[in-house]
Image (tube, rainbow, N blue to C red; front, side):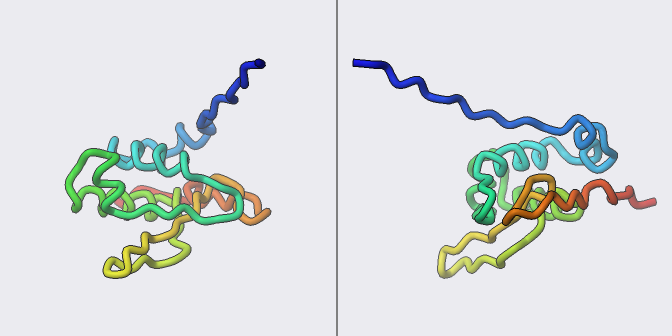
Amino acid sequence: MALKIRKKQYIAQDVDMIRSPAYQDLSGNAVKLLILMQTHWRMYEPIAYSVTEAQKRVGCCRGIAHACFKELESHGFIKLMLEGHFSKQLARKWRLTFREFNDQKPTDEWRNWQPEN
């Protein structure tokens, strides 16, 4: 009986992105959420990720989890594709701007982020 070798999955980050002002300005919780969201990335479907799931996985309160999404969106790392609906238990759906999506190149909105003065 042959052993099946399982291919390990990993997340690679672009060094230019990590060194960017947008990434450097992120809070630790937002960086953690961004990494967690990448584990759900697929080329042809947006990432369904709710505030409740973020709260649980990041280990923070609901308000901070919500703020992390806003922070990632305002810094150009994620883009809302479909609004969720709490009472129907539908999570918001997001696109990572630094990954390909639907055969389109990354849009990299984070490159244009500038700190507020």
